[in-house]
Length: 442
Image (tube, rainbow, N blue to C red; front, side):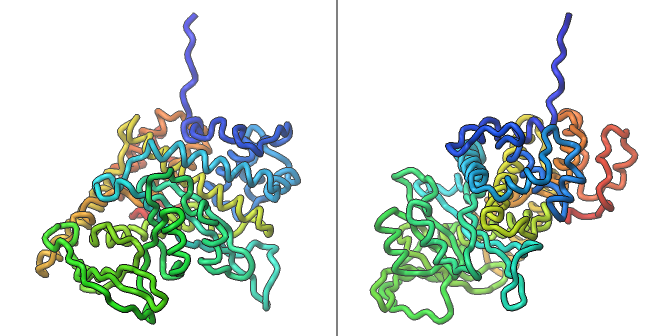
């Protein structure tokens, strides 16, 4: 008798990178009623859905899952420090496994071979429904994330404590080892941050003790003594737009570097501040430009996954939510690459639109007698998952769709930005309805 294996579903392929990670956590425990693996899967499913509350999520989607907990078990797990620690360990393991397999977006910049480049920033969630008020106002909660600019994997670093904890307070609370984020010895770590991450005494300590460097924008009220104007390779295409590279000293005696840059597209001037003295000026400018990719990931979380509000009051639950958002982002990132490698699925229309935008920008610069940096022209890969892809994953998980069939639907969705012909297709290839069809990606 011939045996036919059941088709691989989207759910099996999507969640495959999590296999065994919960059980491997040192904080894992056996819980017959609601296992750590089930807690992890259910948490990712909640991030993917748009339910306004935990009770709403269980009511709307609980029947789809094989091991749905009762309300008391679900909310007890949400507030459990042990479960939170398991989720944190899972994302660390997921990132460690994913980084060697994902495309390196900085591979074409050989000067960065010995650097790990991280964009760090704070992202806010609205207060939970039962959060206490402070001066008649519910306070938003800040989460500190780190985006690997090579692979785009996301890590949650910390949850803000008290009333709007300052960025530097959080960075110091992470300690120097936490700032390196597992990067092996022998590699420098370059952290791209906004103006809130400036503390020269701390920068010096990080550079001397653990080879961590910072790149920021210059604050308006800062005063420096210029020591030297360093020549840079103006003919190098990667330095287009750079107008000065100076070594400066603060009043406290800290040696720093300021790079002046004029955007060829807009003519607007910028000044960048760093304690990294070796990299070409144009490379550092491009790294700061790519800091915006972290904002794109936050936009993905807020507007595509609809994660705008804290799930619960306790700091434990808030961090668990943030860790699950990071895990979901990493799973979407990994699965998008799998679809490209194994099934040849690419977002053709979006790639064409991005190429047109880059071409138009280059033409405008050329008309003004300016040139775009070659590093800008190289950065063509997507910085966030498209809303089409997120909807497709959500719908495929709802219907336990076989991957082979679901991929055909995704090819059609990716074929063009506007799909007036979509509902002339056979019903098996049509995506299930989810709201009103829009003419553009957003």
